[in-house]
Amino acid sequence: MGFRGKMISEYLLRAAADNYGFDKASCRFIAYGRENNKWLYAFDMNHKPYILRFMECSGAYLDKAKAEMHWLSYMSDNGVSVPSPLRSGDGMLAVSVQENGETYLLSAFSMAGGRHWNKDDPNLWNASVFYNWGKVVGDMHRLAKNYKPSNDFERRDEFNIRGMD
Image (tube, rainbow, N blue to C red; front, top):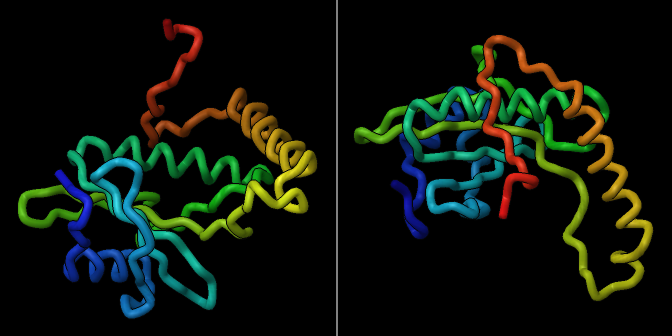
């Protein structure tokens, strides 16, 4: 599996550019994911910024990745301010690419607007921010109650905090 310091190969960058239809020259590394098997890149297409995620994992995870992107799409389509998934050229929400016996899942979505917050600046980090944050979380919760994944998508594992000790 992946590790920090390892970069995505030219082959995988080309596969991403071919699948999503952007110029590979606009693609730039921005961060590793919280787990060691994720890499995040930014790219531009039609004068808009996007995020490209590479995830090294088993091919069996592809359905879960598609389900995650479908859920994000549902949230976005219903007015929640979340990154909108970008479909590949053949309409897929996530793409599987093989390299050297490893499976990489690629997904892309719009770059979230905004800026980094300075929690020490009371003009930025205040009651208004917390109110709006709570509103978005509330909207997500309300919509999640009615979310019905299509038959094409496996439902992601549910997290039940009540069952925790």
